Image (cartoon, rainbow over all chains, first blue to last red):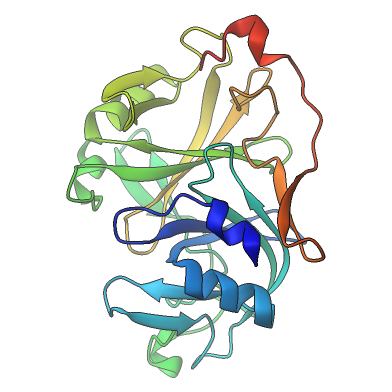
Length: 129
Length: 129
């Protein structure tokens, strides 16, 4: 996978990956990959990330079953961000929302307001990703 | 703008901001904001970023005129990524493409292939952002 050497990883060897719903265009989440997890994503067709908080590799949907089937992978002009169009199984967010971006800025209150409905109760899956 | 204190900025005070075309859903670019540039974005309705390479604030379209009019701002579940839906004037990419994500991974060649047409020649605007 020669193209993976062309990317600009940060000083921790990571690159941000935006995941977009290939059917609806909804931006679902952003997480970090390194060269290994990006290669594994390409090899398997399912998104794999590096968890900065848990310091380990992570197959999206490993425990929840909410996997992402990769359709297309793009890089930006600076080669330091990846965009992946994928088919999302159930929901991207471990909090039960389809997209992790379920809070919107409200100009009047100057606070973040939940604007989406939960598809499942995260208690039932123990908040597993 | 109280909601801005709820965000998790990284150790350099930055937060990644994904810019999505509010009309088409196309992901246009990703760049970094700090609290000041996010506040300025909200105040003016136009995206402002922090340039890591140039170490300065940057109004998108400052010299090119290719500004982004903000429609909606979202944060993700971990409050460490911003998603902005905006109306893009002309093109987001300083290389002349509508979106910065104009290169796609080709499984056969294992390389990145340009899949979009240029809207303008970057030489004409001196590659200005």
